[in-house]
Amino acid sequence: MKLLEEQELHQLVHAISIAFFNKPYNDKVTYNHRLRTTGGRYIPAKRLIELNPKYAVEMGEEEVEGIIKHELCHYHLHIEGKGYKHGDPEFKSLLKKTGSPRHCKPLPSTEKNRKYIYKCEKCAQTYKRVRRIDVKKYRCGRCHGRLRMKE
Image (cartoon, rainbow, N blue to C red):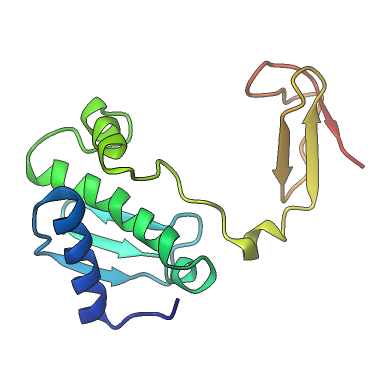
């Protein structure tokens, strides 16, 4: 997917908002080239949605649509004065209702940087990391088992 102009981007967000939420999106939406670890963000004080342009280039339309739906969940709940944060039950139920993803997939370009792979001895959960971790200090987040570096 190519990067859209600001007006085209606003039209896309507005169309998704009408289709999934039956409400218009009247505020600003932009690309933020400084975003690194997230697909997008909603800034309540400015009523602004910022999207990571790398997701549009590397991942395609389906992932971008999911990110826009996720940010629109924040937006519409905030406008209505309901709980719009990730932990709020209203937010979680609206995500389910609209089929929006809770998290975006990692970018393929950042996946290449993860050199160290750790595996739990108990539950076989794998962890990919850019930096080494001290296996004596850290345990598995799922079952608290010992971690071992895969070779």
